[in-house]
Image (cartoon, rainbow, N blue to C red):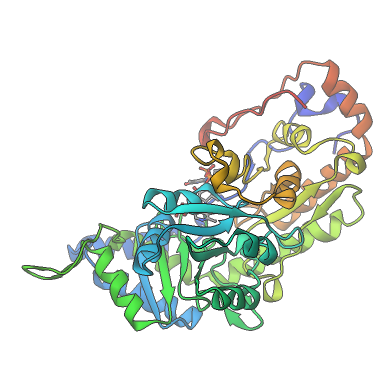
Length: 420
Ligand code: T4K
């Protein structure tokens, strides 16, 4: 541990970690099993177009979640788009302003109008009262996001959707393996979209899926994913190429086989951070509200500048210079990003909780590449930074930082601006 603020990486000292610790390093523990499955795919000569491995992957997902149907697709963004198209959405769709930009872009890209609602500060999921205030005659649907694996207030959203004859669906890209009151994510609303991107809890290199209980919706989505083709010489409707490859499905099956171990590891990391940081003034870990901690894929903290002594961006700079690549998802907020920032039409209500979260939120390194002991060291360092925050802050204001880790070229993470 550091003895003095001058020993910090940001002031030219030796970084705490030589290997950067990141949020989202893919699970590579089953490399050999994955290679074996991929080799079998290559040997078979069948590489895509709803092959046997994709079908096996879909069945395995239905088994794990209890969903009636799984339609595997090439990424989470495509899953959102096919879901919205298959549900026949039109006009405006209400979603949280605090989400990954793909949630909004997926809608905008297919001609829908994203309308941003505020979120609940305790869970970061969409706030039901805020949604109510966004409803207009043009609204066709509510798209909740189970952010960080925290399930939305599904019952209240369903009631609101029923009152106003709206469709209800979910972006479940963070929530594979999560449950709410015993019920698996993937079985709520009309349909739920998942991402199996390399950085996700279950990954298929790139990939995604839509889960639904509706036979009719599933059939429509399958058709849409394959250009609307129904037979050798028959095309029934307009569609797109949303197919998942056999190699991706093989990777996904390998990842699915180890969800229990990874869930346990992530929950241990979550517990380690939470218990170590409970006495760190100004650094509050967000509670995970999924049953038993869900997949605990993200360890989310919020920085209270007054109590911690540094603001979130100053802290990120200090951490990155030690090789701790904490993130600030989802700055700047969808409503402040192009193309939505240029029109008030996307943001009809005020977003005080979203704004507060955007300026304070931070994700700590988690996942299979972070041992529990390493998380404990990161937490210990955070506590040390808080105790020395006044001296660090003074130096940050006056000295030119000389970080050895100001950027991670291997992962293209840009250095943060110096302004505090
Ligand atoms: N809805 C929500 C709520 C989402 O969060 C997402 C995606 C979507 C929809 C759309 O799903 P997809 O269409 O993407 O399937 C990452 C992911 O690219 C993105 O999938 C994810 N959300 C988002 C939250 O995170 P970045 O910009 O953080 O990725 P990147 O490249 O900085 O990677 C994160 C860290 O992981 C890095 O520090 C390095 C490490 N890494 C990354 C990759 C790709 C590796 O070690 N190896 C790798 O192969 O967006």
